[in-house]
Amino acid sequence: MGRIRQNQSNSNNKKANNEKNRINELKLNINDSASEFTVEMINAEKITLSNLKGKVVLVNYWATWCAPCLMEFAEIPKKVLEPFKDKNFVFIPISIGESKETVQKKMSEMKKYGVNFNVGIDPSKKIWNKYATGAIPKSFIIDQNGIIKYISRGNSDGNVDKLATEIRNLLTD
Image (cartoon, rainbow, N blue to C red; front, side):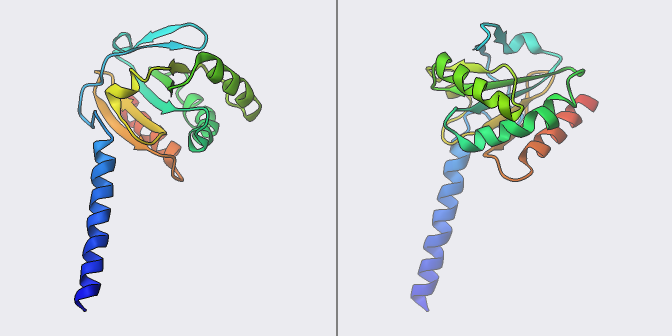
């Protein structure tokens, strides 16, 4: 009986440590001010976060080799970009640790899946390192005042729907 309790205790400790590590992956949390950045997009446009005050911003960290990231991308045009195209909303997907050429090539391939939007690059992970560590995709929804209001980790079923709901709620406040 003691051994069973000990195994359950070890299992609970592992779960607690895994959750602690997930939490520690975030350098910024809900209700924190979003860290300033300027990202270069693959079309050479530069976007500075502080210039987007008054808009709701979805910052999405991803990579070309990340299947869950690309699956999330497939849902974004219909569930996020279309519904909010005429609103004070900006989507900034940022590829981490990859060259512009690699990202351009992947985005060109993604067009056949209806994924045709501009993305940013963060080859040295300077922007990413201000926000988080660990697994991707990770998304941060930033309100009109530059405050993080929602954070999404991974791409579980219904994730993009949750992002859209959070964006809609901020746009109607």
